[in-house]
Length: 337
Image (cartoon, rainbow, N blue to C red; front, side, top):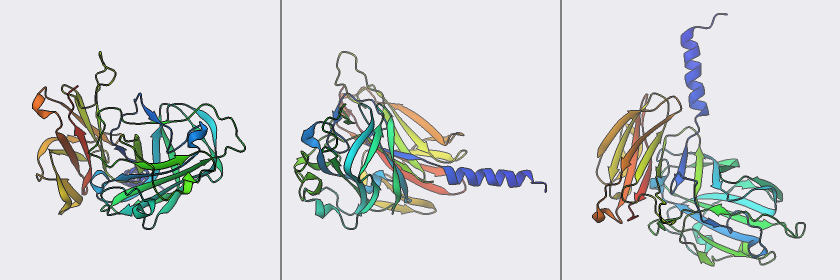
């Protein structure tokens, strides 16, 4: 039987739709960092063999059309072929809370365990966005905030010596006090920290985390970081280049909007799917075409104006093809250097 070219083209389009895997990056799509944290995911030293951790992401920074989270990605500072766990679980839940309570139960309504190695091992690779591919993908509703819980208990009895220590990269500068900080309880093996009722630490720096999504449009943001003469220079410093990337289907238009404030709630703008979160409706600054890889990027240089220091800038994209979709919001805080 002869297959017509139009049929082949349709199959190709449907295949692209089915295989599309876009991601969001929190708070920045950059894996280079000189600072790391041992508590939430792995460890190695006996002082943090157990931990219970919570992270929260406001709805504005997640796809407003809803979507399925298929993997969590973290950057590790070192490698281990088979890090041993007696218990390791990732759970997710929706919430309307804007901040995390230090009482863990207050952050969770009906959590779903999406990843478990209880017991099990995880192979860690250094310096990449390493995926924890979810055993049970999480269906995000597009309107509420998201909570992620991680519980870990290292299998210390069967592994008295673990080397090297495995830590997770965190955002370096500036410390983002404008974003919900993660919380956790931790302790040695047998401390009970894996089941702690309350958090002992509110951490002031965000762990670098990405979410892989099913077929949904997303945006990410990155920045240059000048380290000349100062190891602690910031992302989005005066004179830096900030790059926003829209992820969608090849051939779709990507329209970029910008503002210095968010709306308190998302705004419905039919016929566009999802909600618009910026305060000034459709403050457009660029339009481009998404390439064959499903990406389009636009860069802006941060003006060398001292009065901008501390300003929080928000970006949101609209994709236009056979349908119209809003992406998630990305943001940046302008720093002095």
